[in-house]
Length: 279
Image 1 (cartoon, helix red, strand yellow):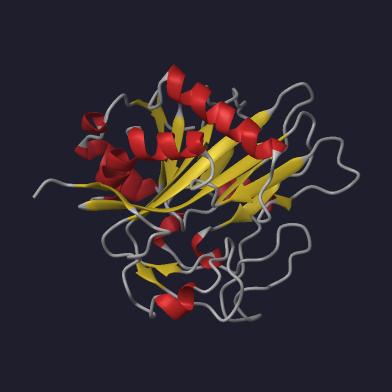
Image 2: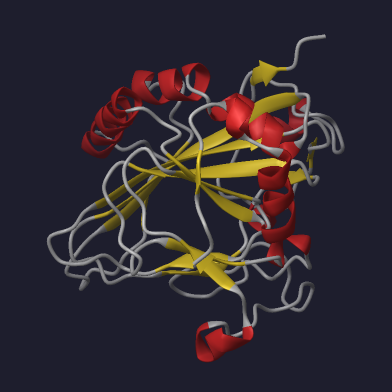
C-alpha cells in the first residue's frame, strides 16, 4: 500500500500529487467528498438499484451467494448523481490531475457488490473497452460504504504507461472488442504478484481513488455482512478524442459515430464540460 493523501479541495492537488498520479497511475484522495455528498450519492445509488436502466449488467454467476450489478450513463435521469458530478470538487480535481484546462464528463458507472459476493473483478484496463483515444483522462472510484483491503480496488503501478492489453469479457473471457491476437494479452498477475508493484487502499466513505483509464486494476469479492456500493465517474481532458469502433463498446453510445467523426473532440451534449479554467 502507498500513502493516501488528505484532499479537501482542488487546491490540495499539489505538484507532488500530480507527479505521483503521472508515475503510478492511481492515487487515493482521503476525504475529498463531504458527508452530505456521500449521503447524496448513497441515495442516488439506491434509486439506481431500485430501477436499473436498460444498460445494467449482472456481473455475478447465478450460484454466487451475493450479487454484483453494474449500471452506466444515468446522470441525466439521476438527480443525485448529477448534483455530485456538477457541484462537488470532482471536476476541478480531475482537471488538475489531468493537467488539463477542461474536465469533460465521459460517463458515470455504478458498481454494487452485495454482502458475500464471491465474484472478483478481474485484472483489466478500462480504455480498450471505450470509444476514446488520448492520455488526459481520470476515473474516480467512490465507495459509499467502508471498503476493506481485501475488497478494495488494486492497481499495477505504472501500467497506465502502456501497452494497451486485450480486453475480454469478465466471466467468459471472450475477445468481443479487439480481434484475437491484435493486442498483447494480460500477464498472469495473481500467479506472480511479487513481480508487480501492486497498490491499493482500504477506504472510508468520502475517500476517492483516482486512476488513469489504462491503469491495470482488479478487486476481490466482499465479505459476508458487508456491502460495497460504489459510484464511479470518468472525466476527459483536452487531448481526448472520439475513436469510433466497429464493435459495441462498454458503455455503448448508439448513433454517436454518425454525429462525431473519428478524431473529433467529444463536443456533444452527452459529454458536457463540467469545469474549465478561467481565461
